[in-house]
Length: 57
Image 1 (cartoon, helix red, strand yellow):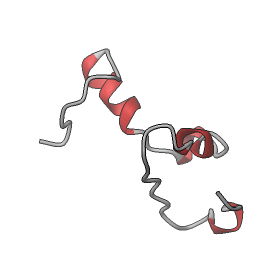
Image 2 (tube, rainbow, N blue to C red; image 1 turned 45 degrees about the vertical axis):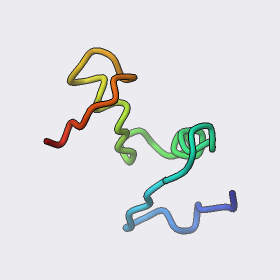
Image 3 (cartoon, rainbow, N blue to C red; image 1 turned 30 degrees about the vertical axis):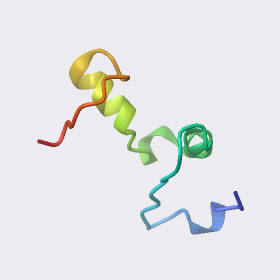
């Protein structure tokens, strides 16, 4: 996973990968206000972040 620190600024970084690919670990290195988490959005609307349904219907 290289060093992506020089890309962070005024850009959008989309982390895509298989389960367990350490996407959340990488996202955790950025300030929370700079990260949109689908799991956090699922948790906010369903009280259970593991529920796999489309929140963007």
